[in-house]
Amino acid sequence: MAETPEVFRYEPLDPSVDSIRLLELEPADNPQILSCRIIHVPFRNRPKYEALSYTWGAPEPTSTILLNGTPMAIGPNLHDALLALRRDHKPRLIWADAICIDQSNLAERERQVRFMDSIYTRAARVLIWLGGADQMIQRAFKSNLENLQERERNTFCSWICGHKYWTRLWIIQEFTLSQDLRVCIGRHSEKWEEFLESLSQHARKYDELSDQMRIIKNLDQKRRGRLDDTSRLEKLLEDFRYAECQEPRDRIYGLLGLAHDCQDQSIKADYTKSTFDLYTEVM
Image 1 (cartoon, rainbow, N blue to C red):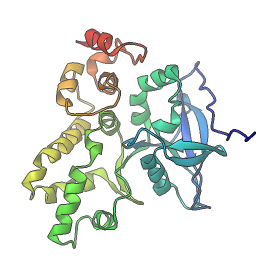
Image 2 (image 1 turned 120 degrees about the horizontal axis):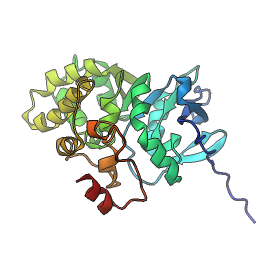
Image 3 (image 1 turned 90 degrees about the vertical axis):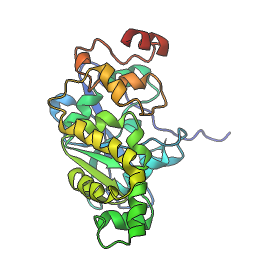
């Protein structure tokens, strides 16, 4: 009888304290193998880490990493991100929801979602992963859109503005609550403020991108005004009605960290509650 392949199994988080898992990306000693470790850390220890903001992509995981020496299947977009972000000679601590939360454990998912806002607020840096992209896109990104032909500049701006990242619901609080924000394409990254300034300068030439640029700039305005923001959940649902998510209850849960009228936790992430009951409670 053939042996059943070993798969990664999560150790439960300590329920007595607010704690998270962090993903330690091991250095790229072997470029063919993406090797990582999972670390449990209480929030009170003030861990220093970077949080990844990205799109999950296809629901079926088709790529593999080694996690604590054991194979684990993950989505290809996350796999590409971790490959690009790992350092050559020293480890890197990352928080990525698909790995750092046991997605098969409903109670843990609920608990982690409830302080997702704290995870992104306390991150030393939030990394927007827009993907590997082709060589032209990466070259344009590295050059800050300088010394490009007009056709290449248009292609880059269209690719950025049309990226599905901007319409993913969960990125709204990930983006808005960040203290330090960087955009990553391939192995290159830029500070958000410099990236947006360059993009705005060039994308304004293309009328067909105006709607997408409005979405991006609205996110930036929400982030810059986060300390003074007193948005109610109802207003947030209206402002971000375009945002997409696979789980309909996440349309509510994904905005709780930003809703001023929900800071008393009068509404909590509860995936045992039906979508109908949740919307009835909120509305």
